[in-house]
Figure 1 (cartoon, rainbow, N blue to C red):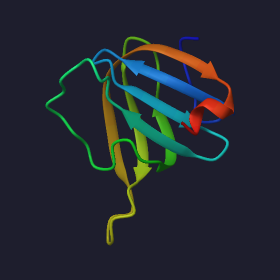
Figure 2: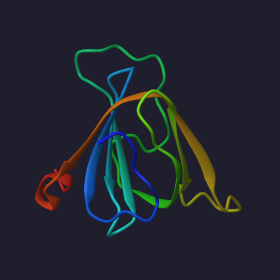
Figure 3: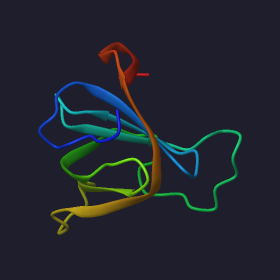
Length: 100
């Protein structure tokens, strides 16, 4: 699969050029960002590894950065834009794997 749109259903893992994985559950509208254990990333983002409210998949296409609108549940902040390094892979996964 080369594109994931906001109106899709199901669960997906989006892998980026930095070896970061984004687990997206589009049915429950949740996101989890997980950095690769073998890669030392200097960039640690708020709530990495936790489930985050996913508001919208703005862009998710192989070869381009993924752009998401998320809610980090920070008082006074309605939404946050999260942009990744370029997407290298989009995989559909069984829903049971998303809850890991």
